Image (cartoon, rainbow, N blue to C red; front, top):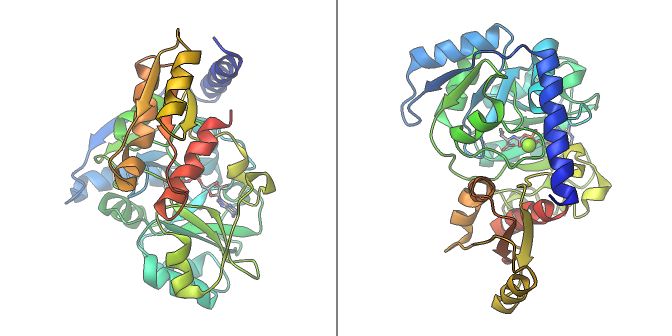
Length: 338
Ligand code: TXA
Ligand code: MG
């Protein structure tokens, strides 16, 4: 086992022990819901669990989320424990109607209104100055709050029937690739949360674009499907945070999206041949995609599959660092930087 694999193993082991200490292993209900036409009675069952102060994993258009009542301090704490998430990493608050933003902030700036109108429901998270409605542990004591309205029928109906906003990070153990299928959530969180909704494969496959509107010039903290260009067409010039060391989005400083296998970004076939030659005894998987959309949708699933199949190295060809490619390269670089 290599050093970084040993560290990952140890981290997973400790996380699981901490979880056992906090939670007795619980029965996780797994509930299949039709993503095109969600059965209301099933959503009601999930909403009951949220109202009780427990945690429910549900699909969104980006990745699966791990949802809890955003007004309930204890329920929020359960999310951090189940994921093994550092407490200084704030959560996104999910709402089902644009009107509900006014309950979370004192003032909605013009730029926020424009972006909400253009991109919500959809994969854009907006950071604003928060009011006092949401407990401090949801936002890691920050004076700001990240808000998003997802474009997924199950997610929207669940938030609506829960009658409260839902905090929801990606429904994976911290540090693992985000879940794009319910199987991934089951792998990571079965026995640790109240319910896992099975609502099909997520459409986009990468987490939402996060934009901070509390700065003079708005700044993208995490690239996603909604691109810089699309945003600039609506609100004019913005910045893109390039260095994760700057750490404006606390979550970006942690190791993310990493399979156990070593991920290497390759430039060309010569690169691939060299790596294979240098590692004759390693099991090497090369990931190939016809286009960016398919790549975004399948990348995290393929990382998990490669781990299951026992690969040591995953090779992925570099793509153009632009548009959706920018978001993909961002996740790939993080997966490489162990
Ligand atoms: O697509 C998504 O956004 C998914 C689905 C489930 O909605 N959620 C998601 O949540 O990716 P999470 O917790 O895995 O990532 C949220 C990111 C983290 O990098 C966190 O640090 C950042 O958003 N964030 C949250 N609140 C913030 C705040 N107030 N200021 C700066 N960054 C914030
Ligand atoms: Mg995450």
